[in-house]
Image 1 (cartoon, rainbow, N blue to C red):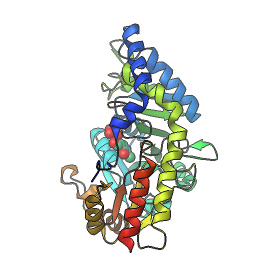
Image 2: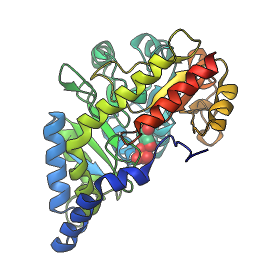
Image 3: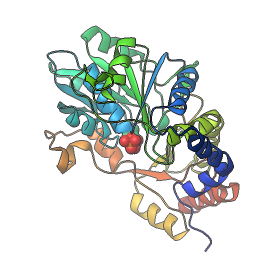
Length: 365
Ligand SMILES: Cc1ncc(COP(=O)(O)O)c(C=O)c1O
Protein backbone atom coordinates (compact mmCIF):
# COMPACT_ATOMS: atom_id res chain seq x y z
CA UNK A 1 0.00 0.00 0.00
CA UNK A 2 1.27 3.53 -0.80
CA UNK A 3 1.34 6.52 1.51
CA UNK A 4 -1.77 6.80 3.72
CA UNK A 5 -4.04 9.60 2.48
CA UNK A 6 -4.47 11.96 5.41
CA UNK A 7 -7.55 14.06 6.15
CA UNK A 8 -5.21 17.05 5.90
CA UNK A 9 -1.56 17.34 4.90
CA UNK A 10 0.30 20.38 6.22
CA UNK A 11 3.65 19.13 4.89
CA UNK A 12 2.32 19.54 1.35
CA UNK A 13 0.78 22.93 2.10
CA UNK A 14 4.12 24.19 3.36
CA UNK A 15 6.09 22.78 0.40
CA UNK A 16 3.61 24.43 -1.98
CA UNK A 17 4.48 27.89 -0.66
CA UNK A 18 7.91 27.24 0.77
CA UNK A 19 9.83 29.94 -1.11
CA UNK A 20 7.29 32.69 -0.50
CA UNK A 21 6.94 31.69 3.14
CA UNK A 22 10.71 31.87 3.55
CA UNK A 23 10.67 35.38 2.02
CA UNK A 24 7.93 36.32 4.47
CA UNK A 25 10.05 35.22 7.43
CA UNK A 26 13.01 37.15 6.04
CA UNK A 27 10.97 40.33 5.71
CA UNK A 28 10.12 40.07 9.43
CA UNK A 29 13.80 39.42 10.25
CA UNK A 30 14.67 42.53 8.23
CA UNK A 31 12.13 44.67 10.04
CA UNK A 32 13.22 43.71 13.56
CA UNK A 33 9.60 44.05 14.66
CA UNK A 34 7.95 40.84 15.87
CA UNK A 35 4.61 41.81 17.45
CA UNK A 36 1.90 44.23 16.23
CA UNK A 37 3.99 45.78 13.47
CA UNK A 38 3.65 46.46 9.76
CA UNK A 39 2.77 42.87 8.81
CA UNK A 40 -0.14 42.66 11.25
CA UNK A 41 -1.46 46.10 10.24
CA UNK A 42 -1.22 45.26 6.53
CA UNK A 43 -2.80 41.83 6.99
CA UNK A 44 -5.72 43.33 8.92
CA UNK A 45 -6.26 45.85 6.11
CA UNK A 46 -6.01 43.23 3.38
CA UNK A 47 -8.43 40.88 5.13
CA UNK A 48 -10.85 43.78 5.73
CA UNK A 49 -10.72 44.63 2.04
CA UNK A 50 -11.28 41.00 1.04
CA UNK A 51 -14.23 40.55 3.43
CA UNK A 52 -15.62 44.02 2.64
CA UNK A 53 -15.80 44.88 6.35
CA UNK A 54 -14.39 48.10 7.78
CA UNK A 55 -12.69 46.60 10.83
CA UNK A 56 -10.51 43.54 11.37
CA UNK A 57 -8.73 42.93 14.69
CA UNK A 58 -6.29 40.03 14.66
CA UNK A 59 -5.75 37.94 17.78
CA UNK A 60 -3.83 34.83 18.84
CA UNK A 61 -6.49 32.16 18.12
CA UNK A 62 -10.05 31.56 17.00
CA UNK A 63 -11.08 30.72 20.57
CA UNK A 64 -9.62 34.02 21.84
CA UNK A 65 -11.53 35.79 19.06
CA UNK A 66 -14.77 34.16 20.22
CA UNK A 67 -14.07 34.97 23.87
CA UNK A 68 -13.48 38.65 23.14
CA UNK A 69 -16.40 38.90 20.69
CA UNK A 70 -18.78 37.32 23.21
CA UNK A 71 -17.49 39.47 26.06
CA UNK A 72 -18.00 42.75 24.23
CA UNK A 73 -21.32 41.94 22.62
CA UNK A 74 -23.16 40.53 25.66
CA UNK A 75 -25.94 43.04 26.47
CA UNK A 76 -26.04 44.45 30.01
CA UNK A 77 -28.12 42.32 32.37
CA UNK A 78 -27.75 39.11 30.33
CA UNK A 79 -25.31 36.31 30.93
CA UNK A 80 -26.09 33.29 28.71
CA UNK A 81 -24.60 32.31 25.36
CA UNK A 82 -26.63 30.03 23.07
CA UNK A 83 -24.95 27.97 20.37
CA UNK A 84 -25.19 24.70 18.50
CA UNK A 85 -23.76 21.70 20.36
CA UNK A 86 -22.22 19.94 17.34
CA UNK A 87 -19.48 22.43 16.47
CA UNK A 88 -16.53 21.38 18.60
CA UNK A 89 -17.43 23.32 21.76
CA UNK A 90 -15.22 26.29 20.89
CA UNK A 91 -18.01 28.79 21.56
CA UNK A 92 -18.87 27.06 24.84
CA UNK A 93 -15.23 27.23 25.96
CA UNK A 94 -15.06 30.89 24.95
CA UNK A 95 -18.34 31.66 26.75
CA UNK A 96 -17.07 29.99 29.91
CA UNK A 97 -13.81 31.94 29.70
CA UNK A 98 -15.79 35.14 29.30
CA UNK A 99 -17.62 34.23 32.52
CA UNK A 100 -21.03 33.38 31.04
CA UNK A 101 -23.51 30.51 31.13
CA UNK A 102 -24.03 28.25 28.13
CA UNK A 103 -27.12 26.71 26.60
CA UNK A 104 -27.66 24.84 23.34
CA UNK A 105 -30.16 24.65 20.51
CA UNK A 106 -30.63 21.76 18.11
CA UNK A 107 -29.53 22.01 14.46
CA UNK A 108 -31.12 21.26 11.13
CA UNK A 109 -30.42 17.69 10.05
CA UNK A 110 -29.74 18.61 6.42
CA UNK A 111 -27.30 21.48 7.06
CA UNK A 112 -25.94 20.62 10.55
CA UNK A 113 -26.43 24.32 11.35
CA UNK A 114 -28.76 26.35 13.59
CA UNK A 115 -32.04 27.74 12.25
CA UNK A 116 -34.22 30.41 13.83
CA UNK A 117 -36.85 27.74 14.61
CA UNK A 118 -34.34 25.72 16.64
CA UNK A 119 -32.96 28.79 18.37
CA UNK A 120 -36.47 29.90 19.30
CA UNK A 121 -37.25 26.55 20.93
CA UNK A 122 -34.16 26.85 23.12
CA UNK A 123 -34.24 30.55 24.03
CA UNK A 124 -34.56 31.71 27.61
CA UNK A 125 -34.75 35.24 29.04
CA UNK A 126 -31.09 35.30 29.98
CA UNK A 127 -29.74 34.60 26.46
CA UNK A 128 -27.86 37.72 25.30
CA UNK A 129 -25.61 36.24 22.62
CA UNK A 130 -26.23 33.64 19.91
CA UNK A 131 -23.16 32.14 18.27
CA UNK A 132 -23.86 30.94 14.73
CA UNK A 133 -21.17 28.53 13.53
CA UNK A 134 -21.12 28.09 9.75
CA UNK A 135 -20.23 24.44 10.17
CA UNK A 136 -18.09 22.59 7.60
CA UNK A 137 -17.98 25.86 5.62
CA UNK A 138 -21.66 26.28 4.80
CA UNK A 139 -23.09 29.79 4.96
CA UNK A 140 -26.84 29.22 5.24
CA UNK A 141 -29.27 32.08 4.71
CA UNK A 142 -29.20 33.55 8.21
CA UNK A 143 -31.27 36.64 7.54
CA UNK A 144 -34.16 35.28 9.64
CA UNK A 145 -31.80 34.63 12.56
CA UNK A 146 -30.22 38.07 12.19
CA UNK A 147 -33.59 39.87 12.03
CA UNK A 148 -35.07 38.05 15.00
CA UNK A 149 -31.96 38.46 17.15
CA UNK A 150 -32.02 42.19 16.41
CA UNK A 151 -35.73 42.41 17.36
CA UNK A 152 -35.06 40.66 20.65
CA UNK A 153 -31.91 42.63 21.53
CA UNK A 154 -29.73 39.51 21.24
CA UNK A 155 -26.25 39.92 19.77
CA UNK A 156 -25.39 37.62 16.88
CA UNK A 157 -21.78 36.40 16.72
CA UNK A 158 -20.84 34.51 13.53
CA UNK A 159 -18.11 31.92 13.90
CA UNK A 160 -16.46 31.81 10.46
CA UNK A 161 -13.52 29.60 11.43
CA UNK A 162 -14.68 27.02 8.88
CA UNK A 163 -16.42 29.31 6.40
CA UNK A 164 -13.90 32.01 5.53
CA UNK A 165 -14.55 33.12 1.96
CA UNK A 166 -18.07 31.66 1.77
CA UNK A 167 -20.47 34.31 0.53
CA UNK A 168 -23.99 34.86 -0.70
CA UNK A 169 -24.11 37.33 -3.57
CA UNK A 170 -20.77 38.80 -2.52
CA UNK A 171 -21.79 39.19 1.14
CA UNK A 172 -19.26 37.16 3.09
CA UNK A 173 -19.92 34.96 6.08
CA UNK A 174 -19.37 37.32 8.99
CA UNK A 175 -21.28 40.24 7.47
CA UNK A 176 -24.73 39.26 8.72
CA UNK A 177 -24.39 39.44 12.50
CA UNK A 178 -23.09 42.06 14.93
CA UNK A 179 -19.59 40.70 15.04
CA UNK A 180 -17.71 37.73 13.58
CA UNK A 181 -14.67 35.63 14.34
CA UNK A 182 -12.33 33.30 12.54
CA UNK A 183 -9.37 31.02 13.21
CA UNK A 184 -6.09 30.75 11.33
CA UNK A 185 -5.28 27.33 12.82
CA UNK A 186 -3.03 25.63 10.24
CA UNK A 187 -5.72 23.31 8.83
CA UNK A 188 -8.19 26.12 8.22
CA UNK A 189 -8.87 27.39 4.69
CA UNK A 190 -6.72 30.40 5.52
CA UNK A 191 -4.18 28.80 7.82
CA UNK A 192 -1.08 30.17 9.51
CA UNK A 193 1.90 28.04 10.58
CA UNK A 194 0.84 28.25 14.19
CA UNK A 195 -2.14 29.71 16.00
CA UNK A 196 -3.99 32.86 15.03
CA UNK A 197 -7.45 34.32 14.75
CA UNK A 198 -9.40 37.48 13.99
CA UNK A 199 -12.50 39.42 14.92
CA UNK A 200 -14.33 41.46 12.28
CA UNK A 201 -17.25 43.82 12.46
CA UNK A 202 -18.85 46.83 10.85
CA UNK A 203 -19.39 48.28 14.33
CA UNK A 204 -16.58 50.74 15.11
CA UNK A 205 -17.28 50.73 18.85
CA UNK A 206 -17.04 46.95 19.05
CA UNK A 207 -13.83 46.89 17.02
CA UNK A 208 -12.24 49.57 19.22
CA UNK A 209 -13.17 47.56 22.27
CA UNK A 210 -11.80 44.33 20.74
CA UNK A 211 -8.55 46.14 19.90
CA UNK A 212 -8.20 47.18 23.53
CA UNK A 213 -9.12 43.78 24.99
CA UNK A 214 -6.62 41.87 22.86
CA UNK A 215 -3.89 43.80 24.64
CA UNK A 216 -4.64 43.95 28.39
CA UNK A 217 -7.49 46.43 27.91
CA UNK A 218 -5.00 49.18 27.04
CA UNK A 219 -6.25 52.32 25.33
CA UNK A 220 -2.60 53.29 25.14
CA UNK A 221 0.57 51.74 26.48
CA UNK A 222 0.26 50.81 30.15
CA UNK A 223 -3.14 52.52 30.46
CA UNK A 224 -5.93 50.02 31.11
CA UNK A 225 -9.24 51.57 30.05
CA UNK A 226 -11.35 48.45 29.45
CA UNK A 227 -12.03 45.62 31.88
CA UNK A 228 -11.58 42.02 30.74
CA UNK A 229 -8.37 42.51 28.77
CA UNK A 230 -6.17 39.56 27.81
CA UNK A 231 -2.91 39.08 25.97
CA UNK A 232 -3.91 37.80 22.55
CA UNK A 233 -1.84 39.17 19.69
CA UNK A 234 -1.13 37.74 16.25
CA UNK A 235 2.62 37.84 15.71
CA UNK A 236 4.36 39.38 12.73
CA UNK A 237 5.59 36.10 11.25
CA UNK A 238 2.10 34.57 11.23
CA UNK A 239 0.68 37.76 9.71
CA UNK A 240 3.35 37.69 6.99
CA UNK A 241 2.47 34.04 6.20
CA UNK A 242 -1.24 34.88 6.09
CA UNK A 243 -0.58 37.75 3.66
CA UNK A 244 1.01 35.22 1.28
CA UNK A 245 -1.96 32.88 1.59
CA UNK A 246 -4.92 35.26 1.53
CA UNK A 247 -4.78 35.81 -2.27
CA UNK A 248 -5.04 32.01 -2.73
CA UNK A 249 -8.15 31.65 -0.57
CA UNK A 250 -10.79 31.82 -3.31
CA UNK A 251 -9.06 29.41 -5.67
CA UNK A 252 -8.30 26.99 -2.83
CA UNK A 253 -11.95 27.07 -1.72
CA UNK A 254 -12.96 26.24 -5.29
CA UNK A 255 -10.60 23.25 -5.36
CA UNK A 256 -12.04 22.05 -2.04
CA UNK A 257 -15.58 22.30 -3.43
CA UNK A 258 -14.56 20.29 -6.51
CA UNK A 259 -13.14 17.55 -4.27
CA UNK A 260 -16.40 17.42 -2.29
CA UNK A 261 -18.38 17.25 -5.54
CA UNK A 262 -16.29 14.26 -6.68
CA UNK A 263 -17.27 12.47 -3.46
CA UNK A 264 -20.92 13.40 -4.01
CA UNK A 265 -20.80 11.87 -7.48
CA UNK A 266 -19.11 8.72 -6.20
CA UNK A 267 -21.77 8.31 -3.49
CA UNK A 268 -24.68 8.84 -5.89
CA UNK A 269 -27.52 6.32 -5.56
CA UNK A 270 -26.07 4.97 -2.33
CA UNK A 271 -26.98 5.19 1.33
CA UNK A 272 -24.09 7.61 1.95
CA UNK A 273 -25.06 11.27 1.96
CA UNK A 274 -22.26 13.75 1.40
CA UNK A 275 -23.10 17.30 2.56
CA UNK A 276 -23.25 19.46 -0.58
CA UNK A 277 -20.83 22.28 -1.32
CA UNK A 278 -22.62 23.68 -4.34
CA UNK A 279 -21.21 27.12 -4.79
CA UNK A 280 -19.67 30.21 -3.23
CA UNK A 281 -21.91 29.98 -0.14
CA UNK A 282 -19.67 27.06 0.91
CA UNK A 283 -15.96 27.36 1.64
CA UNK A 284 -15.41 23.63 1.09
CA UNK A 285 -13.69 23.41 4.46
CA UNK A 286 -14.67 19.84 5.33
CA UNK A 287 -15.97 16.93 3.23
CA UNK A 288 -18.47 15.32 5.58
CA UNK A 289 -20.83 12.46 4.88
CA UNK A 290 -23.62 10.88 6.87
CA UNK A 291 -23.84 7.09 7.09
CA UNK A 292 -25.66 4.46 9.12
CA UNK A 293 -22.54 2.27 8.92
CA UNK A 294 -19.85 4.62 10.16
CA UNK A 295 -17.57 2.13 11.90
CA UNK A 296 -17.71 -0.30 8.99
CA UNK A 297 -16.99 2.45 6.44
CA UNK A 298 -14.19 3.90 8.57
CA UNK A 299 -12.57 0.49 8.91
CA UNK A 300 -12.91 -0.19 5.19
CA UNK A 301 -11.37 3.17 4.24
CA UNK A 302 -8.57 2.69 6.75
CA UNK A 303 -7.75 -0.69 5.17
CA UNK A 304 -7.65 1.12 1.80
CA UNK A 305 -5.10 3.59 3.23
CA UNK A 306 -7.57 6.46 3.63
CA UNK A 307 -7.75 8.35 6.94
CA UNK A 308 -11.00 9.80 8.24
CA UNK A 309 -12.03 11.99 11.17
CA UNK A 310 -15.20 12.87 13.02
CA UNK A 311 -16.12 16.57 13.30
CA UNK A 312 -17.32 16.34 16.04
CA UNK A 313 -18.12 13.16 17.93
CA UNK A 314 -19.48 14.46 21.27
CA UNK A 315 -22.29 17.01 21.72
CA UNK A 316 -21.01 19.93 23.81
CA UNK A 317 -23.51 19.25 26.59
CA UNK A 318 -22.01 15.78 27.03
CA UNK A 319 -18.47 17.15 27.44
CA UNK A 320 -17.73 16.47 31.10
CA UNK A 321 -15.29 19.37 31.42
CA UNK A 322 -17.85 21.93 30.29
CA UNK A 323 -20.28 21.06 33.08
CA UNK A 324 -23.27 22.16 31.00
CA UNK A 325 -26.88 21.53 32.00
CA UNK A 326 -28.27 18.31 30.54
CA UNK A 327 -29.84 18.62 27.09
CA UNK A 328 -31.35 16.15 24.67
CA UNK A 329 -31.11 17.46 21.13
CA UNK A 330 -32.21 14.73 18.69
CA UNK A 331 -30.74 16.04 15.42
CA UNK A 332 -27.44 16.90 17.09
CA UNK A 333 -27.13 13.39 18.49
CA UNK A 334 -28.31 11.78 15.25
CA UNK A 335 -25.57 13.65 13.35
CA UNK A 336 -22.82 13.09 15.95
CA UNK A 337 -23.37 9.34 15.59
CA UNK A 338 -23.34 9.26 11.79
CA UNK A 339 -20.94 11.89 10.42
CA UNK A 340 -17.58 11.06 8.91
CA UNK A 341 -15.00 13.46 7.45
CA UNK A 342 -13.09 12.48 4.30
CA UNK A 343 -9.74 13.97 3.18
CA UNK A 344 -10.16 17.44 1.65
CA UNK A 345 -7.38 19.95 1.10
CA UNK A 346 -6.11 21.82 -1.96
CA UNK A 347 -2.93 19.76 -2.38
CA UNK A 348 -4.80 16.42 -2.52
CA UNK A 349 -3.71 14.72 -5.76
CA UNK A 350 -6.20 13.70 -8.49
CA UNK A 351 -5.05 10.11 -8.18
CA UNK A 352 -5.82 10.21 -4.44
CA UNK A 353 -9.26 11.75 -5.00
CA UNK A 354 -9.98 8.99 -7.51
CA UNK A 355 -8.79 6.36 -5.03
CA UNK A 356 -11.18 7.74 -2.38
CA UNK A 357 -14.05 7.85 -4.91
CA UNK A 358 -13.33 4.28 -5.95
CA UNK A 359 -13.32 3.18 -2.31
CA UNK A 360 -16.71 4.85 -1.80
CA UNK A 361 -18.09 3.05 -4.86
CA UNK A 362 -16.66 -0.31 -3.79
CA UNK A 363 -18.05 0.06 -0.26
CA UNK A 364 -21.48 0.61 -1.76
CA UNK A 365 -21.39 -2.41 -4.06
C1 LIG B 1 -15.85 26.32 14.16
C2 LIG B 1 -14.61 26.62 14.95
N1 LIG B 1 -14.62 27.63 15.82
C3 LIG B 1 -13.53 27.94 16.55
C4 LIG B 1 -12.37 27.23 16.42
C5 LIG B 1 -11.23 27.55 17.33
O1 LIG B 1 -10.12 28.08 16.69
P1 LIG B 1 -8.68 27.97 17.35
O2 LIG B 1 -8.23 26.55 17.26
O3 LIG B 1 -7.85 28.89 16.51
O4 LIG B 1 -8.79 28.45 18.76
C6 LIG B 1 -12.30 26.16 15.49
C7 LIG B 1 -11.13 25.34 15.23
O5 LIG B 1 -10.17 25.10 15.75
C8 LIG B 1 -13.47 25.85 14.75
O6 LIG B 1 -13.48 24.83 13.87
